[in-house]
Length: 254
Image 1 (spheres, rainbow, N blue to C red):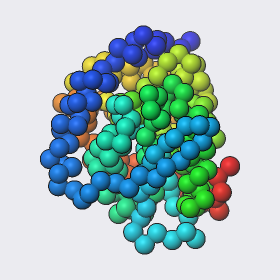
Image 2: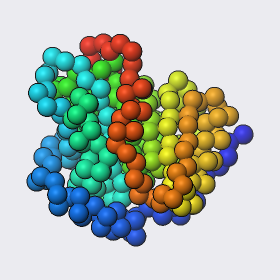
Image 3: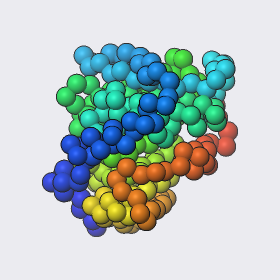
């Protein structure tokens, strides 16, 4: 039997408004010390426009297979939040290790856990025209609303992904909770701040559901951390590197 995380309860998790403003405020010193804003590419599909950043390793070679991470942004999933996530967690370490990162903005007025997620497989196909995906699949990660979105997209399209990492993240509604069985064979790693009580509680409930289904998963509740976690990018990519397939294959992704 599932431990239910109801839509009303998920909506009650503190994600937008206060946290969105607070997250941006925390990053002001970091963003001020980095180079100019990221370059956004434009992708249009089914009448929706998604702008996305494509982080490529230095000396990128189209003939080489690369591990690929789909990094879903927090908050309103705007350009600002894409850039915040890239600077704080992904971009420098990805470039150093030879990962490709795709980080998309949600179409105007929508998000990637209540409709816009249907465009993400087509976005992966679009990027595969430029990048050869190691093993023919991507990994997916996200935090806050990005974590909710990551659960949505991987439960809808599990065949497209090797792994799921959220910090924090929980299924966005009962439909996603009921679809957790789709994650069998896909490792899940979750982190939550010890002071972020609502998200930590929901993360524990999600772990119970995954455990009952036999899905390989870990949850670390980090003492002293709040909603915006100081997760070391080195540690994050150590984890992602362990999720890579032992051998990749040529990859127009399927």
